[in-house]
Amino acid sequence: MVAVPGNELSRHHHTLSLFSDFENETKDLETSLTQIDERGGLSVLAHPGRYWKLEEGKVPDEVRDRYVAHYKKHDSLIGMEVVNQGDRYPRDRALWDAVLTELMPEQPIWGMANDDSHKILHIGLNQTIMLLPEHTEQAVRQALETGSYYFATVTPHPQNERDPAGIPVIHHTDHDKKTNVITIHADCGGEPLDDGAFSWMSAGGKVIAQGPTLALNEVEGLSKYVRAEIRGTGGTAFTQPFGLRTAAEMASDGISGE
Image (cartoon, rainbow, N blue to C red; front, side):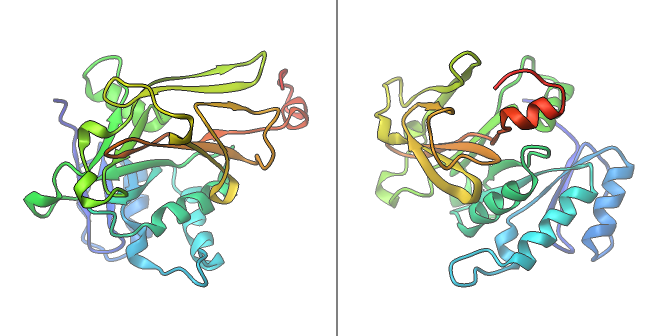
């Protein structure tokens, strides 16, 4: 185990404060985020669905813009909790996609799934899986900053099917620059997954393809970013977003490639 300094700030919008000794006494989120910035810490907005509601099945523009403003202003703010406890706020994923649609590919916002355990029955529902070269505090911080982790949960599945052993394991992801194809290498309990287990989402959270591979030059509906959800027998794993840029956008910045 690697212990890192941190706590949950709960006098305002619940926020994870990491790699900092800051403990807030204010009820103002902006003040807390500024303090974390100044202390060189990292922060994550926790279960945002607690603080807003869908309108006609959509994230209100005012809500989206409020969160986008937080992420643009604060360098320490690197992520969003999008699965919490027993998935109390499924609309958190809708907000994540709405914010990603505004900020990607320039500013990725990394997703997390956390137990936020207040009772024993809350423990073991969700996982944030860090991909670390070594078990050190610095490696944990670097993974958080660069999105070198994925997250998983049993909560979208019926109660009688929830099983952490049935959560897909993502071993690695490849991008073939010549063919412009992304491939996710994953299995579930050591067994291969059907193509239908993989769903790819792009701007707005729209499903644009299925299967472990995504041919970026061939799929319609791609914009800004793509992320994947992989459904196993007992749980679902989520990748972080991959930023997308057109050849023209890259050329304008002096970057070769497609």
